[in-house]
Length: 174
Image (cartoon, rainbow, N blue to C red; front, top):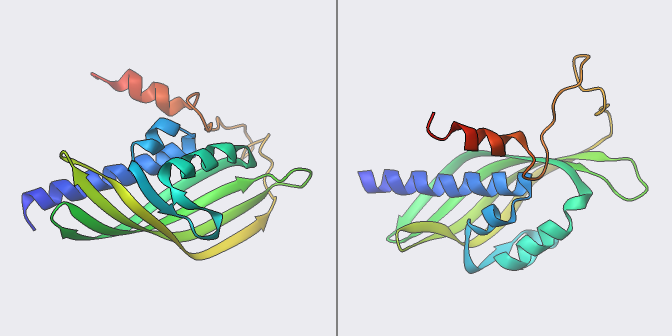
């Protein structure tokens, strides 16, 4: 493996991380920065269409998900010039609220099958297929108001009010 391939792998990993952060924080611009315009996204029975349509759907359904967290695992890379086929393992947690029903937790084990393209020196997704390997739905069991270990904990938020946005801005130059 040469230096350029190592740099390309790291650039692709950065795109994958941006996707997870964008989805978890409901950051439309961050999610859009992951895809090339007109890219295709296949989330199985949930959604098939362009990346732009996927982002619109994700934003419109955001109210159903009180919390999410996407965690990346290992990736396998196959490069062919300015195209990379990348399989990435991922885990996702979703706190789901249905109207008039008790919230429940959804845990998902999945893989992202991505075709990345490098254009103008930048890697982005041109095609994505989500494969689900397993899932578990769990009944509500947490008292979110009191936190865990007996004390209220500061919680993340699914928008730009999340503490991480201010943290990164304040850390520039330090």
